[in-house]
Image (cartoon, rainbow, N blue to C red):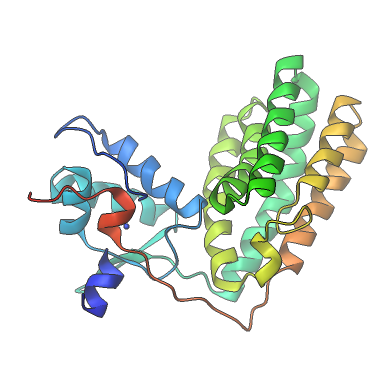
Length: 251
């Protein structure tokens, strides 16, 4: 396989639904999930034809999805070169963390103001899933659960506008971590990356309805995440698109 093919090819091998059963929204979610799981890395070329075969849809539909992803700065569209997964600059990385530091304390406060027992249980289950994934060495599951904690808080905050903004920022954070993350940033140790210990501390404060402590812990947590970045390094591994999204052979 040539370098171009290797760069062009993307979602975890799995059976792909029959033609027409995937909506544009579902395709968008699959690609975003691959970014959140760190399976789709910065710089990967997203060739419309290959993505169309992988998802069993037309290039036109893929193009619409890529335009949406580009509007969220997850994908870059370059004239005469096509689409590729964004490679965040150092300035963009700092801006993303600055934005999260402004948004997430507000989401935490809103969450606490209306959280029911079921909402708190959802966070507890998420932390338990993250800790279990660490114990068994499931790296992608650890990454998904780590980001999931923040998304659950946003989803159950009642603020749909900030929820949407955070979803995009979390996706961009995954690209930032893949580009500049130190080796222990996504480590499987309890304190590696977006650690469950800090999530548990936040949950304890939320259960106590202690807004001041919970928001302080969230700000400190985001500071720790940014501190794990090394802006002098960059990883350029490329996945195979067909294998990642389960390309249908023979079509």
